[in-house]
Length: 339
Image (cartoon, rainbow, N blue to C red):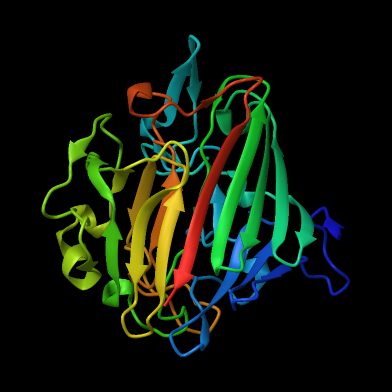
C-alpha cells in the first residue's frame, strides 16, 4: 500500500501510521526512530486511554529524550566500558552513558529515519540500513521491524536483520508504559508487576554489567505480584534490573505481567529474547511535558525491554548476540492487553 521514505507529508509534518485492532487497540507510529507515539488501550469499562509516554508534537522526538517509544540498537542496553573485541579486533564505542555505551550510541537506531511501508490496517514495516563503522560497530546491517496490532489486542514487534560482517546485534522496543493512562498524572507505583525470572544480571555502581548471573534476592524478586510502591525503594538505585527469564526455545516465552488494579488493564509480555530489562522510570524528573500537558515525574512510566544479554559480545557465555553473514536474526516481542 502506501510507502514513505520518512519525508514530510503535504502539511509539512512527518507521516504517521495508524494501526487499528477490531478489539479496540490502536497504535500510532512515525518513521523517525521507528517510534510508537501513541497506544490506546480499553479498560474494564471499554474506555480507552493512551498508555505510553510521549510528545504531542512529532518534531520533539528529534530532540534529546529518554528513548520514548523507539527501537533501540544496534545493541540495546549497556556494553560495559564501551568496547569489545571481536575476531581479534577491538572496537571502541561512544561512552554515551559514561563509562558505558548505551542503546547503540550517540546516533543509534532511535535517532535515524527509517523507511516505512504500511502493509494493511493492522501492520506497518519500518526498514533501516546501518552502514559499516556506524557508531563504531563493524559491518553493514539491514534491519526491518514490523509493528502489528492483532484481533486479540496484542501489540506485536517483529524484528529481522542480516549483516555482511560479524557484529553484535540485539534490538529492543522502548515504550514507557502507564496503564492508568499517560495523562492521568498517576505514578506507576500504583501498578503491580510480576517478572518470571529466577536470575538477574548484577551491575556495578555505574550500571556496568559484571558478567555474571545471580539468583534474585528478596529486593528484586518479582516471581509473585508486587505493588511497585513497595518494591521500587528496595531496588538498586531505584532503577530496576536486567533479568534472565525462563525460556521456551520453540516460542515466545512469558516474561512479565503488569497490572493496574483501578482500571483493570493488564499487560502480559512475551518474547523470544532471553533477557528483560525492567526500568522504573527513575530518571524522569518532571522537565518533560507529555501529550496531555502533564509533566512526567519520576516513575510516570516504566519500561519492560525484551533483549539479548547486552554485554554478550564480551561475555558470550551469558548470551551470544553476534550476527554473522549468512544468518538472519529474528526477534518477536508481544505486549498482550486484557482486563
